[in-house]
Image 1 (cartoon, one colour):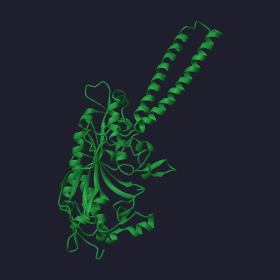
Image 2: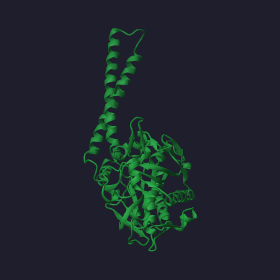
Image 3: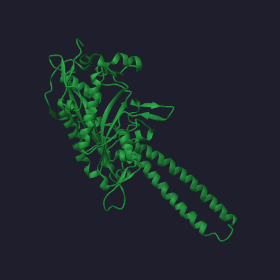
Image 4: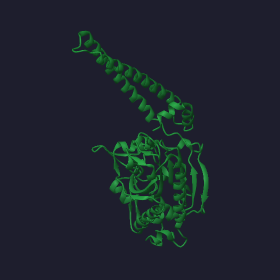
Length: 413
């Protein structure tokens, strides 16, 4: 949620910044400010009326006269009417405020921009389903749960477990505390991260329990300090969450629905940081550097893309994607992403910190980034590791973590 004080102070700057996103109504800020002005007028009237009530009460000497009773009754009725009107306008204003996405960073790209590339892209070959065979069992997964569910079997399970353990070890070494969070959350957690009302069509809901299945552990990690005030000396706080994730993937079609590239259930290792506002831009680059170091250790060719401002999620001020080269598709595809959400999520979740020598706590900044999207990383490992002799070579970093050094590609696809 945006800072209402900022909008009051410099509405033109906010209006101009939001216009870059292309998904905000031109009069959104005007309607918000009009509602805020009505709220402030009603607040002033209510304060004046309360002063009158206090004065009338102080004027009483003994039992009130009929005239005094009538005056007090009239003031009380006016007070209730003004209070109701003020609450209604406040609700309208707050709804308009909640509908606004985050203000994009000044250096958020006007269009998708490749920042750099690493590794030897351009290799072609069989795709992950052809290479894995029944180790990625889509047919039996569909019989069990419907389309876009899979059984992962055999040595691919050992590869996944080694990948997760290795990634967690890398993040612990970089100062992240490992967390296994709940994957069923209440609505407020999704609202707090900006998933609601932005992406409700992708979220599974358990109607009988008023709970939702998370599409990323970012949701649970963001709420870890909801409603808290942290000391400046506690920042930055960095967490690495591992969890299954669930997405409806409504509207997905075509080649993306083949295999495990875009499925309803998958696992991720997610990074999440709570930082002081002045440190969030540097933290964003730090998270990106960690994502790149993981891809380089896994020997996966990739490119970094500064995502176009009109393609940012509601909470993001700036976002990078790391796109891996997938020989089976013959193109780069998104593997990880990282976003600086500035104070947007923290304001919704009421997470603050107390700066040194400051009288009042202030809203901190939050950031998130994918360390490992397990299913897509397995795809990249299989397709980039395939050899002419029918083997799939696994990077030494994962072999040292317990993964098999080579896998046998399925015969005949």
